[in-house]
Amino acid sequence: MPFPSCSTDASGLSHGWLRQAGARLIELFVLVCSLALAGCTSLPRTPYTAADAAVSRVLDIDGLRRYTDEPVTKFSFAKDNSAATGSYLALSGGGADGAYGVGVLNGWSAAGTRPAFSVVSGVSTGGLIAPFAFLGSQYDDTLRELYTSGLAESLLSDPSIMRVLFSSGLFGNTRLRELVARYVGPEIMAQVARENAKGRRLLVVTTDLDTQRTAIWDMGKIAAVGTPEALKLFRDVMAASASIPLVFPPIMIEAEGQGRKFQEMHVDGGVTAPVLTLPEALLFQGRLPGNAKMDIYILVNKKIERNFELVANGTIDVASRSLSSITQSQTRSIIFSTYDFAKRNRLGFHLSYIERDYPAPASEGFDTAYMRALYQYGYEKAASGQAWTSRMP
Image 1: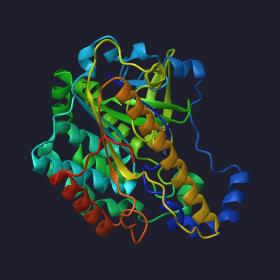
Image 2: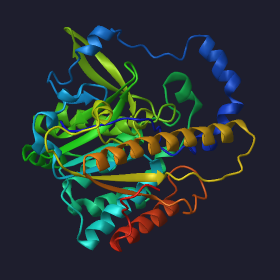
Image 3: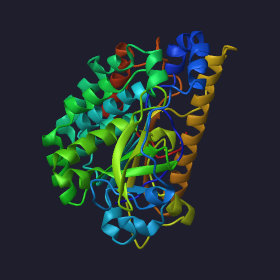
């Protein structure tokens, strides 16, 4: 499995969910605390240990995932330079701003210059886009529908304090799971498996809350298993990658270690990785093995330039702005590290992101009108050849 990386980004959804649900949560805060103290909010789990986690396997198969903090030798390109050649598309998190990335991909197709990527990685909203970007422009219409038809807007409907009390997410994950299942079936999995057999790689990131590690799932290898259980895992990983804590419940993934069965708790990949580029150990090492070469395309579904905003002196506004600032800073950090690495190794570096002056959405969540406009913005930039830069902002 080739070249993952990590940093921090909890933007499986926009941070605006804090404002959207904040008033209701504050009103019921006393109730939440009293019931929590009564011990009624914890859901039972099968205990397991760090030793179990260290040797855990999913579907009883080795190598379905790696972790970003593993040694470079764990990744295939360290042994085979062919895995580190060609072009690599890294799709960031960003919630509703994923409409920008979809617009760029579709406009890129229209321009006739979009490559067939050797590797595609996706985090959070990027994890939802990644399988279709991996399979190519034949799925451009699918992506446009997913992000502009209004389907996504239903993901943040019907918040419930009861879910917070007796589950672990304000909105539940039924609609998210249904959305993934609607677009990802046996045919998609079979196509991913065929491309995987050609040596191409599709990677999706989740955060394992139990171990606090960034998991990189080899979706092609999962698809190649070809069983109903593998299809369920494929869908679960996609849903987990976009499951921001407190907003959506975690996705529990069946695993086994040291002869014991248990469930791992996986949430939004953006909690620990805003975008997936190169392994931590490799960035620290500072060079690629052998003569490996590649073009790295980082498609950031958000703004990465700092901007001024007079922040209201209220709990929800301060929290939202703080989370946004953390995400932006850490996204910039991994981009700068990758840029520096690419220049030192004479690799192609290409970056696309939402410009600082693009208008903010009128409302929070998955606003359909905003997403349609953002899609068109990304489409026009890519179709006119203006989407990508080789310089840092």
